[in-house]
Amino acid sequence: MREDRFAGRDDLVLLEIDPTRVQGQLRWEAGFPHLYGALEIEAVVSARRL
Image 1 (tube, rainbow, N blue to C red):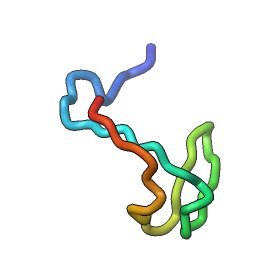
Image 2 (image 1 turned 30 degrees about the vertical axis):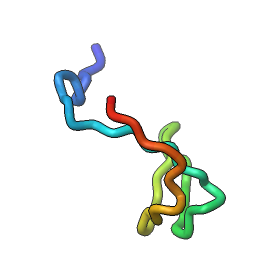
Image 3 (image 1 turned 135 degrees about the horizontal axis):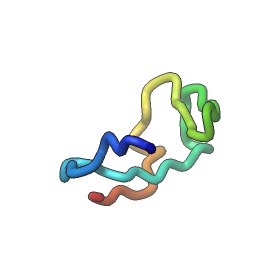
Image 4 (image 1 turned 30 degrees about the horizontal axis):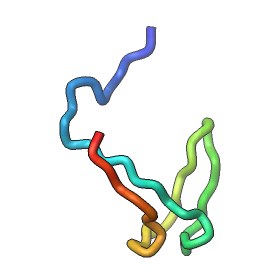
């Protein structure tokens, strides 16, 4: 059984990031992107509440 650690949360935001605008190192690990460095606001394409 998979534990859903975000169940019941109402303060989450989904960010869509343009990887070509990211200055830090972006690596795929365990199927998810990980950013090593700061996230520049210019790299955020959209944001929405979940």
